[in-house]
Image (cartoon, rainbow, N blue to C red; front, side, top):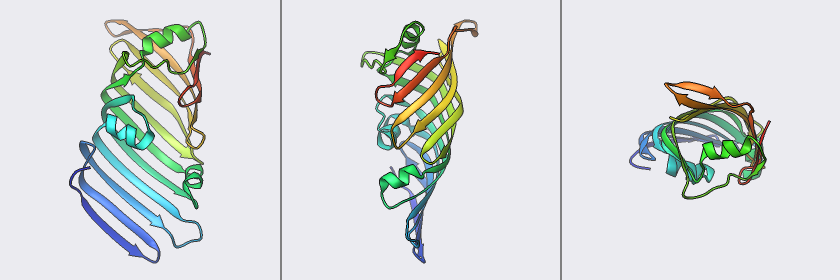
Length: 212
């Protein structure tokens, strides 16, 4: 985080802080945080608008992901309440939009994984530091309720394939369920649809990946 304009106001047990005109993860961003301690159970509200962020650092700090990078845009409006982090996570709600361009997924060859999954169950992401998947663009919009983020408009594009899909992530249990439709780009922007959808289900670190 570079230089930023910070302003705060505390009134009747409610602290409002704004971070504006700032450098955030190599890009530009603004954040508004409201912490309400006036009630028995504390509440938090947050609005974030970030553009051109360095995805490698951002995703590692905020989601513990060390395999996703690229120029990242994020718009989010979130709220939560609780007496501790676990309660806050279980009451998290709001929405966020994520866009990544000129990015990469490190440790995974998506085409290789899709070819294996087409005929068998794969356990885990099969991470290999020698593997890399380049992506032109990725985007998704999530709606969060009670700590579960749902989406129906995931789109991932690269020179060799396109993937669309949807599903949900349970933030508290660190579990997910997604169904994807992969398309192979065979030349002149012609896409060939694979015969089966791909399901990704289980814990974040080691989900089961199998044909639907």
